[in-house]
Image 1 (tube, rainbow, N blue to C red):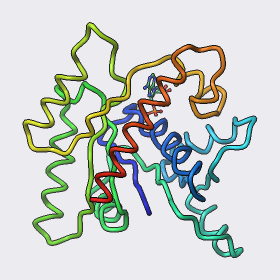
Image 2: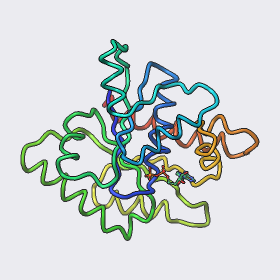
Image 3: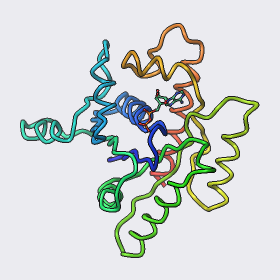
Image 4: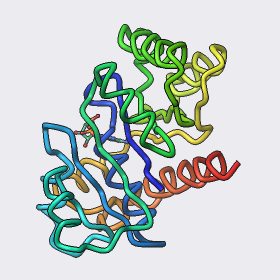
Length: 213
Ligand code: ADP
C-alpha cells in the first residue's frame, strides 16, 4: 500500500505525520518511508535516531538504489512530499498512491491555500485523471478551552470534505520526539507522550477502515 502525505501549506505536521504513520505500519509489516520533500526533514529526523526505527527511510534516489541492489519490496510505503504540490505533482501522487492523507492545522479556516488544492483536485477530476481516496487530518490542535479543532472539523465537513474524526492535539512531546529523532512513544519523562501516540494510532485505524471500505 502506498500512502502519500500531502499538504497545501508548510508547517502542517506533514513530516510528523509521515514519521508516525511509518512507525505505525512498520510495527505491523515491512515499511519504507520515502522523503521526497526537498527540505529532507524526515531523513534528518531518522538520521538523529539513536534507536533503530521500525521502518527504513530513503530519499527518492536512495529508494531507486535500494531496489537496484535487489532490496525487498515493502508491504507499505509512506511518502513525505513537498508542501504545496504543483498540478503535475498532485496528478502523480493522486494516480500512484492508494491513499492521500492531508494533515492540516485549524488555521484552515482562514487558509488561502486550501481552495487552491481543492481547485487542482477538481481540475484533475474534470480531466478524467485518477484520484485515489483521500482524507484531511487535523493536526497541532490547541488544547481546550480552544474550540479551534472542532470548528475546523465542522468547516471541512460542511463542505463535504473527507476528514478523520480523530484529531492530533498539540503536545510538546512531538517537539521532543523531533529533537531526539524517535517516534513519540519513545519519548521518556513526558506524561503526554502516550496520549500523543494514541491520537495518531486512533487516526490511522480510522484511515485503515476508510481504505478497507
Ligand atoms: P511540515 O512537514 O508540514 O512542514 P512538521 O511536521 O515539520 O510540518 O511540523 C511543523 C512543526 O510543528 C515542527 O516543529 C513539529 O515538531 C511541530 N509539530 C507537528 N505536529 C505537532 C503536534 N501535534 N504538537 C506539537 N507540535 C507539533
